Image (spheres, rainbow, N blue to C red):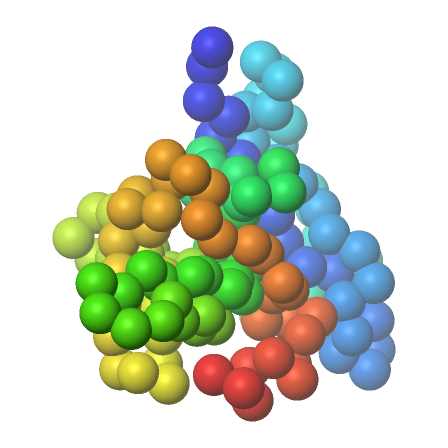
Length: 132
């Protein structure tokens, strides 16, 4: 099985709302070129979001800038649910960024049991950004 190397980019309307996503990269064994976006208003030029290669507990593909809910098991006390954003770490790995706590965690620690759930993204769910 080959890992899909793909990206997505939000296509915005004139109000700045996402009305569609475009995907590009190596998808289903074929190269799909980056879409020509000259006829669209894009939120930020070059704001492509890379696929992490991982799926959440519901089987949804996870991309950079997705907002996730993660349950962290404590050795003492109750489990804690936290909300964070998927980011690329400059050291070369995917991580969950939890701004509320000023912490990050490598995403791969949650892969085995798919212990995370995508609840939105930073473009379409600005109300979730206020939570974190």
